[in-house]
Figure 1 (cartoon, rainbow, N blue to C red):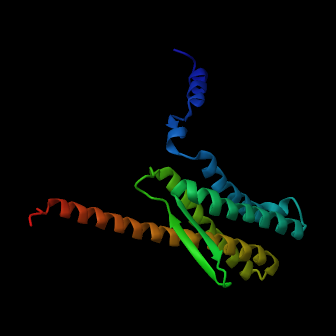
Figure 2: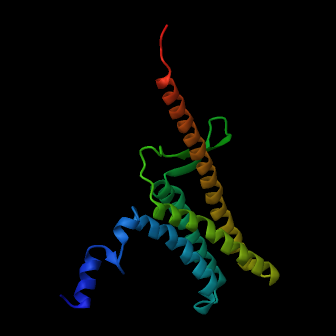
Figure 3: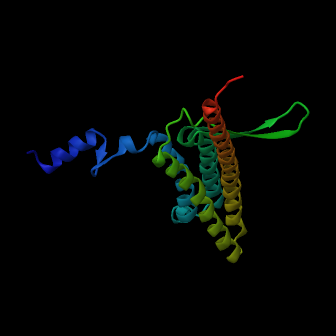
Length: 194
């Protein structure tokens, strides 16, 4: 029997931490990390930035950059890899705007509840937190800080709406596949004698 420290080091080298296999729980651990990192960093910057600087312009720029990195990461990377969803806005030749919502073919995709939980939790909880910050800024009549919150709610809200619409599309596709599979099994059992 080795020491506790050597057993712990062996478990860590195998991807097991605290008796929990991290490598098997999440298919895309780096994507999940960055899905949560930028939004958490923006919230923490908003909450604690005045401890380090009184320069509102600097704080505004840092928060908006973190929110922009978060928006891009969620929209272009984590949505595709963690839950197989994507959305975008396409400008047509006549100048009109058309929103597109897609979901990956779920029959070929191995679902991971950890990836899905991280994605949906990370997508839906921060807008609720930013809403509380908005209420606080309104009650204090602090319109400078409300500006940061409006930017955060706008960017987070766009991703929430986009992915909820994608999820709706995925549900409709799944219903269509189930109906098609049901019809094909019924037709297979019908005798074809003419």
